[in-house]
Image (cartoon, rainbow, N blue to C red; front, side):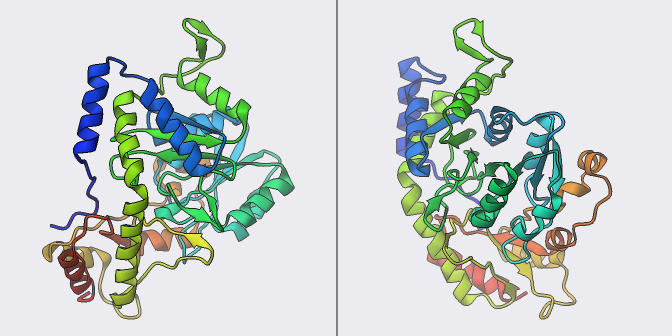
Amino acid sequence: MISISKPFIGSEEKDAVLAVLESGFLVQGPRTQALEERFAALCNTRFAIATSNGTTALQLALLANEIGPGDEVITTPFTFIATVNSIVAAGATPVLVDIDPETFNLDAALVEAAITPRTKAIMPVHLYGQMCDMEALCTIARTHNLRIIEDAAQAVGATYKGQPAGSFGTGAFSLYATKNVMSAEGGMITTDDESVAERCRLLRNHGQRERYHYNMFGFNYRLSDLHAAIGLCQLDRLHHFTKQRAANAAYFNARLDSVVTPKVQKGLTHVWHQYTVRMDRGRNRERSRASAIESLTNAGVGTGIFYPVPAHLHNHVRKIVGDICLPVAEQSAQEVFSIPVHPQLSEEDRETIVAAVNQL
């Protein structure tokens, strides 16, 4: 089976983890600091703050921007549930706006109509590795004095007109095992705002600036040096792996004709965390997505559905946002599926994937 994702662990990662174990400095030590410095440089931000995972990075990004009870945050329903859960965990209210049918990202043209006196922030999600329309969203944010909290969990290394993901406001990244840069588990916050960075550091470590002296309420959201050591090795491979993902995506774009292939917006660098297609109802009107996936599985091609249920249709979110209809997100959730695009695909793998998908 050609897996939908395949984390790469080399000798460098193994040696780095052993070196941390032998050092005795296991949590939030020199490797964590080095990873933060590398991330800040990658995202062209003044600060980067490591956390225990991508969800805690989102939550702390919100709290550090003083977003909480009584505030509203506009975001997309077509995302991993952590996006919405982080807003709820911060005590704020998610306001869900429909998506662009080509990119599957938040539709910037619909955002302004969702703003109320309680709106405090916009949380764009750079889904699958392609950034949102940040020029439009930042213009809206400036006009209405709103914060930008980027959910860049899937977009490390992506750019919008040359500007990196995570540099448009406060960014939050995931370093989960299947991400383009991974540390097995971890997260990262990026910002140019020194006060936001300081609050993130306090919040992730029980609110303490010095040992056993607590300046504010906080959490245990630290990253271990074991994880950071893996992440540093992975960053060394990011450029090469991103080029290979892009080459695989270009290969599929040129050869797949049975599905609707991804569209890359002008001026954007897509990093292809996922290669996500849509069922072509013109060609496959009678075929369900489930039967298509079954055929691919039988041909030895792994798939994933990201995501089968929009956020507003989950019970705990519905209790907050009510019974709303977001038709583009709902239709997309019924039609999309992802095929392997990871950098370890062989030429034979790519040929197998194309042949199987074109049989649909």
